[in-house]
Length: 535
Image 1 (spheres, rainbow, N blue to C red):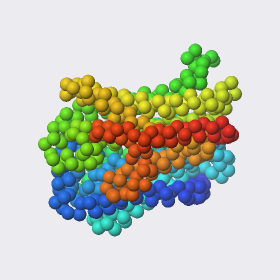
Image 2: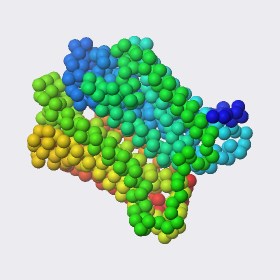
Image 3: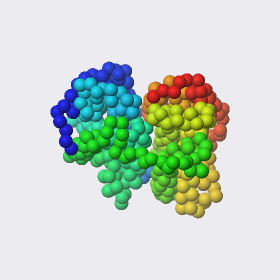
Image 4: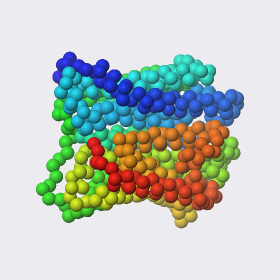
């Protein structure tokens, strides 16, 4: 990599520009992330102030392999240890999404829109944009760590371990900023960079689940940054050397990002889009066929990931059932999370509730494909060849609706099939698990509707779809611990999902959620038909 000092000229000015543009977004991100971690810690202070109660909770969690697989094991029954356990998945996911959003927004998105080319024609160096994005994003992660540290100390938690927990979150965010920095060099659009980064986040999460802490495959979790967050062991030994793994990979990825940046032209990616044939395939004679071509890669990836996850969780279901049945105390906890049902049904309901928000991520990604195609100016070419706006939008929206539904069905079928074959009661278990999964679709489709509404009315604000999902995640997380007003809980569409395995029935609330999702989609399509095409 050959870089000159002039390549970094104007970096300070670019940082000021980013801070100016994101003067509202950045404080929201910082407060948002801090509230999650500190809020969970405060909930444990409120609910488990007694050491005996914490010890009982610790034993209950450790005896359940499903929770250990999803959230990791509790390493210490203190307030800090419980906080580290409960935030070891949600915290990294959210801070990772924040980091990759900021990096892509201020690099590839600006480059795709032609703004960086204009800036580069002035007294701004070639690497100034990438450097300013790295510095700003890393700075946001450091500020988040400081705010979390101060909040945890304010609750009376040990200062040293509090900063270790805060640093593990910040370094995870910096790692995904570095990953996003590489992805924007490889791809030619912000959408592709976003899909690649989030796909890696999902893949790392699956590796973490496959690497059970106390199982024979625990070594697999060392392949995932989620595993590193766990093995830092805040409040349970503070293994500072694990933070060095983050630092090594961050440095390596940042160096790689600069190296790739120096090798490519402005506006292009290392992985160039190959030229298509002179004439289109017979399979591409409709807007629907084109939409399938655009969505199929993501659909196949998510399907493979969640079929694998369903098989794994299905195989462990019988073991979990036996553990829960012999542990009355844990039975009360699992029933609180999964509904008032039998041990196995409560376990299934808990897993579905946990994964509902993950499927909402797919819904948002698929819907924002429309915005990506518009930003890349592919939309103008399609519309200039006799395709109506309505047909194009509906063709893509079909995959934003049916895509998450198909992935969820595949997951439920693999889950129910594996569990049913394991117990010898396939005809009874499979239909019930499938029905319990399907009722989550209206809540998932709400996020398709929200994304479509932003795309149709205010396309430049489509990223707020992620803010909406983040708000729902906070409500659902804190709702597990605090006695929150029902009006606030009702903001989350997942609050209205009936737990069929616990004896609930499909009622008016979930029907209204479905109607709301449909209305939001219609609003988005109507808005798109009336507005101008934008970059």
